[in-house]
Length: 79
Image (cartoon, rainbow, N blue to C red):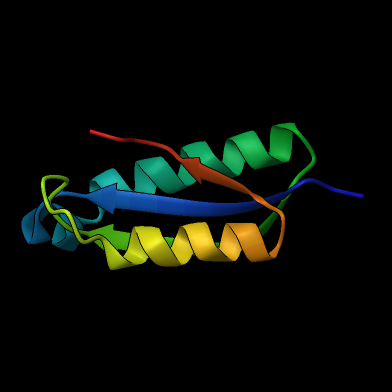
């Protein structure tokens, strides 16, 4: 049985989100890792939010889904 993953790709500003460049690179990193371990992506979450904010609804949803599927939460970039 393949290991299950939930991914969160994020950028801090809407400008970064609109360009898609940072997000695309993160998605590729996540996909590469999942392929390398023979895993399965359950769902991908996209967050365009400052990391300074305390409330992070996409992160909360990603954690909840990972728990529900007994999956690993994978985040390509956390800065």
